[in-house]
Length: 376
Image 1 (cartoon, rainbow, N blue to C red):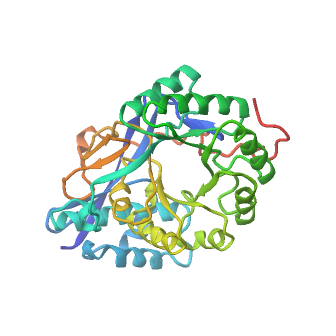
Image 2 (image 1 turned 30 degrees about the vertical axis):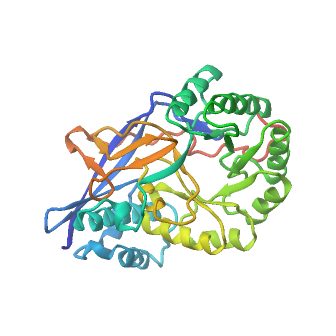
């Protein structure tokens, strides 16, 4: 079997609500989902999800190769771009290609990916995460009631502007999830909106009444000293890593003892997740996949010994995709469809990519981390 080509498509996910974080809110309820389809000479096709704008530059590393050598091809892709670097958008392209290669590897074996990577159990524990900063209190409660109905006992809320608003919202979700457990796990995600002093003050204020399991990305992703300062200044664990584009970017954080929960973004590929999980395991640290795009890392998460919990952001799938997963029992139940379990109906995909919004959570505000008091 050889890789012979690719097709790049775009679809959308309709959240049915506005989503965002401390940096901003998306202007529409639909967001783009890039889809990469790898073709082979035997008719099998592999699916990768996530931005892949550098695919023309990177594809040569896998063209003509047997996709069953996915880990080796991952290194070949990194080698292909080593002079210019693989961080950022290029790493997303590597991740999408890697995901599609693993999808093909499992399809060639006629088994679901969770079997291919060695998992014994199809269930992946998860936590609820509604990207909910734009929701008013009533809408927030309705959303997390839906998560509670599916058995969730843990939730992560977006916050970081107003400590009293965040406290009220966390207490609301604590009460809702309290129907499933006497001690819900509650997390808050600041998405790099604070400096280290702000982070300690904000989290310490919350912790007067709320037992936080972790605080996520309290300061900039690369600020090892800042993350370590926050870690030693609050009771909650510090979680970070979803925006680190390469295994080497974790090294300063781990050396500084700056992270308690090692996170991995869902769009960076299967190989990156497996390697990051192994490095974290060597430090006795748990690993947690972050973000959505049909939960492609869930299959790999089922196979690693130090998986903690997988972020679950919604109950439905992008338009034109059917995904062999069930959101139930407080997590993800993986199916038996070969590969990632994702089928693509290209007739239903969006024909063109929507223009990139100039506002939203992907745009860092000018005064982020530079405010004397949080924004109301």
